[in-house]
Length: 158
Length: 324
Image (cartoon, chains in turn cyan, orange):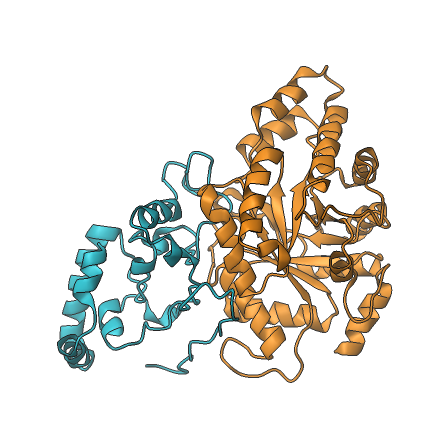
């Protein structure tokens, strides 16, 4: 999965594609639909439009009933079950186990900023290629120096 | 605003400059006791006054819960003001379950304006198991996001939008953590995230397994987090076999080891409450000897009036010192 992320890393061609799609509503919808199909199948993606998967061991935090972006809540059962749906395994437990198995547990200590609720059902790939996801999380665990909360909020539409 | 804060502090039993009593006690190295008081399912303040009065002189501050277990009750802030007027500094709990970021910031400002000296922030129980399972769960922010917002309001005087505040709120900011919920090896790091986001103190889930708590605390200390955040361990008595069953099966995130359950089941009926209080007092004694534990947070829902007895049984008097 980390390979997939490598494959999607922004490059000039992707950036051009992103701005091309951003200006064409119908194509954008098609592209977003394709992204939805791929990511729903692979990760149970909910299309929050601001993808945290690379920092969560590729377990989607938006499938958590509380949509927690910063780690598991305190209600995880001793057997690893979700507090809200006991027949499901806690998605953050999966995130932790997968990240740790790949030596990526430190990813989970990054502070994830609150999401922009306007971006539901938009393409996170386009946003990513356009550089809008760069400050979704802090660069480190924030313990050495206090990290600023603000991701500049764009008032009104995009 | 500052004058209102001072006014509030003047009501508290142990004012120390502009700092609240809780912050002063923790920073002064006292073994600090806090207790939980649930607001009533009622429009009457008498129940809060009664519970708080029973605790005055025995605890440094009381937590006023925020619709705990996702059940609708009197608001956290109103109950906090009642506790303050009754002479015990409140710790206002604030969850992410029922409010979006606008309302959360509004409540944080209101608490600052009214002189509520302490806030403790958490994600909150999901409504599914409360008394309104058909409610919309909000969770616009998570607990770490909310801590971050609170610290930014206070220390930078700015809202999430970036707009600045004419007067910033000034409260002591806390978080919660559950050392007993998987993934166990991530729980200390998760506290680190909360501290990075702004937590100055943390209150934990019920400790019934001191050894397991010790393993978490060792990780916390390895990360140097106990120097940056006061660790308050949650404790409480199991007063009946019904309560035991409830805690084991109905409250998410509570872990009761077999030997504790066995002790309660072994005593004759009618002595469960005494045994439960004894177990609780013993746990308090063990916690108090652990370096890194700054105090205890007593959760005795419906039995708040027994807290002074338990503290006495544990030998924790007001002004007790902590292990270093």
